[in-house]
Image (cartoon, rainbow, N blue to C red; front, side, top):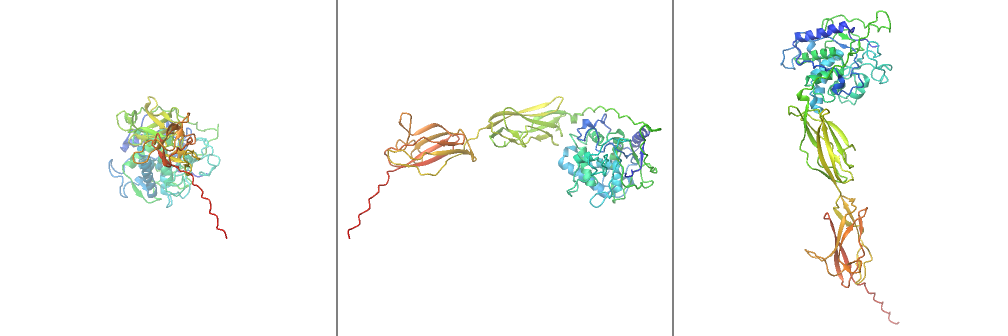
Length: 568
């Protein structure tokens, strides 16, 4: 079993004392730039996607050392200080680079979260002492795995193996892994490739920092809001003492820090079995007098046997604290149309317009990370991209969100699309959309046979045409057929080829013709009168597609008998 960092403090009076010391230290160091949110201890209220009721770390041990009472610089000073100041303010170069890179990545993909890299630094300090003082290789991977204790229910949470030992080397129980101390089941969901090497390694600081950032930004959190930041930290490790400790380092780092060479960072000494993680496969003790309490680490006590004499009683799990009352800046006030135009499309095609809405808070300002659900209703087979009829998306930093593309089905007619935000008092917008039937843009013959007849006879071949829209057959297309004259202004011809009505009379215009299910129309028989010549038949659809067919009336050629050969 891997040796643990430092010492573990027993639950109960000791953790209470540490919590009290944390508060005192915060006050003395002028650290708390934002107060702890009341009732922020319920991870379920945060929208966290962490498995079950557990936290990212499995609530295994963590360092409880607090920052020194003298902050590295006064509030408002530069965070890019030279390599001077207190040792505790120094962060190993690779570790610091990973935190800042994660902040940049999140700013590009989830700007509404507003993740500060100092929060990652605070958690990294508490979880692993900045990867054991920066003991990482050139790629940011720890020289040896950082492993927490087995989460076997003996003084810790009970989490049976979920990864077959792939990450933590333990096929019986899970252990927290890496510089940010993810338990395997959480890493399986949130693991990232932060350094672009094609792997998601919890022992790589770039991968772990980016995963921690995405985990903290889960749901609708805005980490610039104190209540959201507190809920994010508590979702990482469900302990108010943990929150106070992380908060103290967060404020410490915000007041100034500097880069130190990898491997030279200060290693904390005090960690607790209260509810966190932070053990290591590196048994080296922290340097004496370089930070924290300076106490000499003592071996971790052997977990007491159930019912054994002198065994400490397990601390009961505290009841969930009530969620804080949302601030006006985070409370949904209204949902409005953000410039959506008319929603219309032809059957089988994508709508050119997309629904866009904007959420505002009760102060009238854009509200980021508000969940908006778009739903298609009515008798239609139109769907969003991906074949869905319902989709839920968060608003961006400007409060807007755009629904996926609507793809029209074959059913024509009107239907509705609703956009809904909020739960207690939902805000609803309703849009009307319509799908129109295809209208033929082309009408063409199905063959290229010459159409000829002798005077007074009927044409041997029938005219057959097909109506299409962008190459797709259009059923039920109305067609008008007219025998026309030539010239720039053609009119109905009064002589030449014609159709016949039911009484056998000559008819030179037919209406109420329609294509069949395959888009094909076969015209009635055409007859010739005694006038010879070349004539024109015009076919027109209601949508304006036109075809002109040439008809020839000519007497059949007369065969001349061959001359008799002269007598010999």
